[in-house]
Amino acid sequence: MEPTLGSQLLGVALVATIAFVAGWYGNRMDARKRAKKERLARLEAELVAQYEEDMRLYHEEQRKAEMEALAMARKAITPAFSS
Image (cartoon, rainbow, N blue to C red):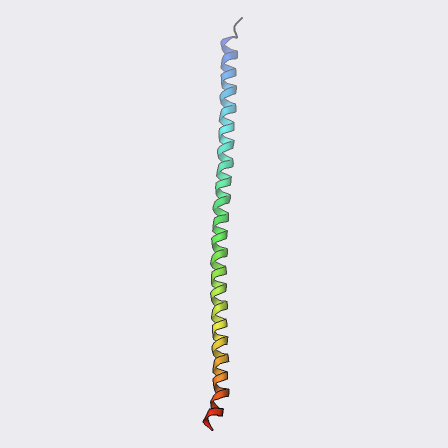
């Protein structure tokens, strides 16, 4: 006994629907993963830029402090040699 044409068409429609839903869901998950990776990459770039800026400011402050210390040392030493 062969299945009727109606049951064959229902079977094909069911398989096609399952395949479509599986493909759509897989595509949706891939899009979410891709969006998450892009979001994390942007966040990482922002954090790296902020870190570099903070380090630049820190080194600039250190250099200024060293220059001020040297200037104070020069002022303290200069009168001793002037006399």
